[in-house]
Amino acid sequence: MAAPFLYEPTWERMIQAVEKVRERCNRAARALEAAGIAYAVIGGNAVANWVSRVDEGAVRNTRDVDILIRRVDLGAAKAAMVAAGFDYDRVAGVDLFVERPDRKPSDGIHVLFAGEKVKETDPLPTPEMTETEEGVAFRVLSLEALIRMKLVAFRLKDQVHLQDMARIGLIDHSWPERFIPVLAERLRQILANPES
Image: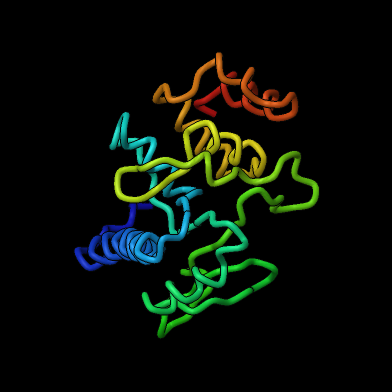
């Protein structure tokens, strides 16, 4: 069976999808910065920020925009994001900002709160805002804090992100010692076979 041919409109839609995520992320970051709200981009866009510093060809696209803020700043963040074209919503227990006019949760900006557990069973809470730094286009978590978040969540996509970072040398066999035993063991699993 022959592979499907990618017509020009298909390429255009792929490029537009990536650009929409980038624009959404940048617009949210600018809105929060303008309002003086401490934030950090987390998740796949933060991984892309770190990976691009070493090998831009190893960057993966993501449809998610995830941010970390302090819970006490949620009210101010709502006001800033409304002014930037987003509405606050809570869907299936997830805080998010959805873009007007479509308001699609799948295209929303997911919010996590600094210093709080995402799930009660998580071994550690999310990082504090003191563990952020200036990234290429927005504030991001420090590399160590980002890796710790990925190790706590440890879903398949988190494991893939960790493998990507290991393959390009952002993390190596010296890193597990930085983390509590359960996270150190997870990282050793990744480092034992970063190509899997």
